[in-house]
Length: 544
Ligand SMILES: [Zn+2]
Image 1 (tube, rainbow, N blue to C red):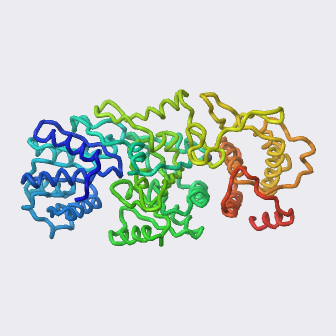
Image 2 (cartoon, rainbow, N blue to C red):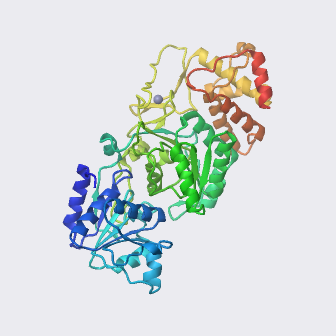
Image 3 (cartoon, rainbow, N blue to C red):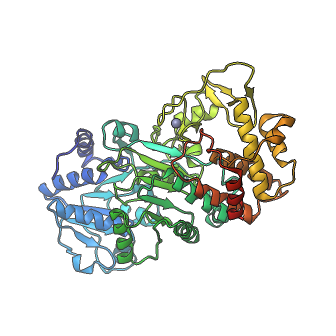
């Protein structure tokens, strides 16, 4: 047994004071805080007192891990799980059971009696409201029921007060980062904040089929890969997709760009899945895309980049997904979150403190995010320099501060996100040179896409509020920066939503191609170096 951290001992102590009382404690401990260590300590003490303990979980992976860790700690448990018949050990004091198997064998049939227990530990206890759990819990009226979870809420964000009587909280994510037990995050978020807007909702979250139709498009999947190439630092990455087809699509798009990617879903055979995850660990595989397989109970600290491609209204699911990449590892100073789901705009930063409810009528609250939404605190926005999501300057990642307002040479413009300083929105500022470069880039895009002549001027007006001066007509096209491409694309998305003219497949292809070309180390504030117009023509030719 390794030594417990101070807060872990504290949680164990608080729990043990409740043993033998009518209390049903729910331990709330973020991923990486050592939930399993806490459980193992409780179990060890129980073993010393010759008490019997039943540990229940719902995923095979978690059951296996729990059993393995107990063996390491010197306790060999019996395992109640389909496929583990050789490890039944019905007389062992500690039983680790899969909820489905236990329910099927001991309740729906009489293949085995319910294991005796004075302590019942329910792992991933946010699932405990399911009927199978309720039925099993009812079999232990005299035992102490202890729940463990990082996210003590049901799918709709409400508390678990109908099952548990009190919460025992470990430190939250921000404190664990302070203590060095988790790493801080660097969040990149897409331009479209509400990508799942209008998608039908059922029992607290989006309907998967409708969500898949929204997210599983060539354009959005292309963005997932383009943004990973740009911001992912080629780190070991896990991607969370909406459904199996979406996950496969993401994997294939990565492969198109020569990124070594693999896919896992619920039907992937165990040995194949283990092999895929081993390749991710070794670095042979760079990205593993999955659908609802790695959302909880999966533990690989080396992975430090998380792609969220599955929008969710569930704070719990969001926290579970992000939690996968927060564990510290050798040489890992932070975790990159590439949020294509709009989750951070909705649920705030992974570091934000959550007020977890116990009562079933109360919901989890992120007070910081609520203040941002009400305008009492600066809203989240992208840092204009490094594009990491930030609440208020200076940017936590690069130190960016807003420039001072000076001279008449600068426009204040609408139509773009303004930086919020002290609760007041300020539009971004552009110099004459910025405007010229922007126009030249628009001309290039106009050529590339075969737009009519006035397109660049109209787009310029769209951004700057006035048409460009006549003299701009003499300016040569310039390679568009990534920021300009993104801006044009965002306007085109708005355009497409008005059902006027969706971007053509050729355009999307050209955009993606140019994003790939621009995928060198890249500072979005620096205009891309001008090239010889002859080269530029060549480049457009190559894109066509
Ligand atoms: Zn920054």
